Image 1 (cartoon, helix red, strand yellow):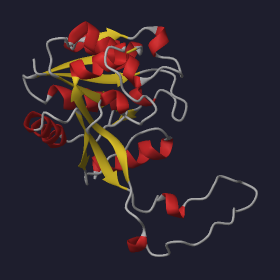
Image 2: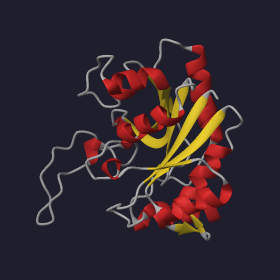
Image 3: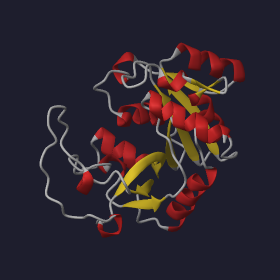
Length: 232
């Protein structure tokens, strides 16, 4: 296998309780992520990392490989890197790449994965490829510190959207990285600057600008939006 695709879902979500097993059209949200991963072809091995009984039962019924995630990997303080390292250690020492697939994103686009894979295959100096989207209305320049009592005073820097400095944000869809480099950094055999965002995935990361609609489900509002898009 060339790539290990780790579909991640844990119980105990705070924004939307049990978000990964909330249902759209009678199907658990994580089913969309699992089916996406399975659709990526014979060179991609899918494994589901979870502590959710319903997800384990789903995998058992369909003969989908899974890892029952240890309690220490499911706490609020656990990092996604811990879960990925656990999966790599158990399943991916013969895989060149590892793909992180969040279980709470039902809108999925295989072409984004293959774009990332193609880029890394052709550019050995890069450690990872991560999908990003251009920040539009929800831009830092237009935000206020949260205050329910009074609107904070903020200087007007950019009135029109076209005047805003471009920012990008990870949309949650694609994180593809070289397995062994990540594992070496995680285990401490390769030094890296831990205080930088996404640093565990490498020092040189390709941002893949994605214009597809992604809904990262964390709230009831997100669930309603994703359901509307899927059913439109």
